[in-house]
Amino acid sequence: MPDQPSADVKLRQLQILREVLRTGSARYAARLLKVSQPAVSQHIKQLEATLGFPLFLREKNRLIPTHQAWELLRDIEVTFASLEKVGKSIAALKGQEPTAVGLAAPGIFCFELLPRALSALRAHYPGCSVHLHSGSYQQTAEHVLNGRADLGLSRLPLDSNVFEWRPVATARNVCLIYPGHRFEQKDLVVAEDLVSEALVDIDPQFSAHQMNVNSLRYMGVEPNIAVEFDATGHDAGFVAAGIGVSVTNEVIAREYRRFGLITRPFEPSAVYHYVVFWRRGYKLNGRQQFLADELARSFVVSPPRAGST
Image 1 (cartoon, rainbow, N blue to C red):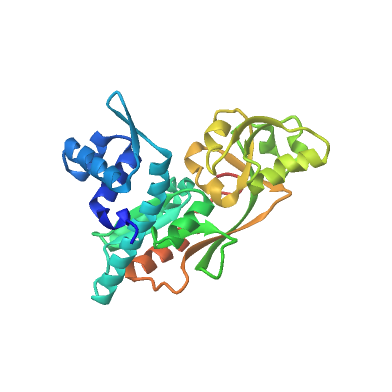
Image 2: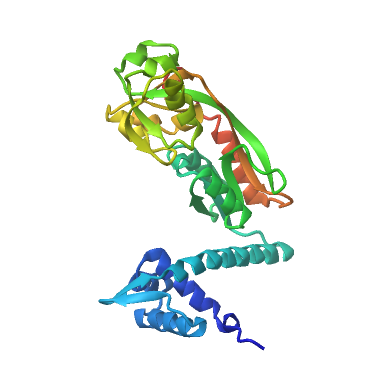
């Protein structure tokens, strides 16, 4: 029979490799795992010997991950997510409800919405902890699909073959401006108003880009892009600094309340449907259901004043 080195790989070795790659340092990994640094190094060497290929290049006491190490990390993450799912299943079979809830959501919601919902959760379940996984809308779906998170907060479309969801909000586009900007005198901002206006614009893959930049190009006008960013929620600081204006949606704009920015309805607009979602067929326990309810409630708590965030 051919050799099967994977059969000799120990879970502890994979856990140590995972933390070294996550933290970027054997020292930090050792501190996190509460073991000595030599023990971390020894486990890595044993794992490399078992696998038959190097996971790190060693240069001046530094560990530089190889391409194979990063490839392996993806499978390790899936493995540990699966183990967490097994642990939750065992707890459910024993009639024990896990005290932790895994939640995936875009990081922008950490300003306002998530703190409100998690505060209510902690008040009702004082011993409950939340493991938050942030990322893009696509990454949020992957976290839930792979079992790293029990619940997700995202927007449609999602695959109904693998997810179930609960609608929580609908939003349209708004123009985000700083106090004193000329758009403050308008009831509605349209694409023509953006001609020669400095823009803080999101990457072309996002629909907000289609609403403003593509509308200008359709009119034969090249947009004046001052800053282009690649993740939802990065425009607020630049707009607050007076660098330009941005087009986002009402739900995202609510998260910017503390920046003191102003919004005006923007046309043309898309419609965004936000949902709380989970894996199809997955039965939510008490804590998870409570959190889903609070997330839905947080979307309607303290709506922004008309014309402002």
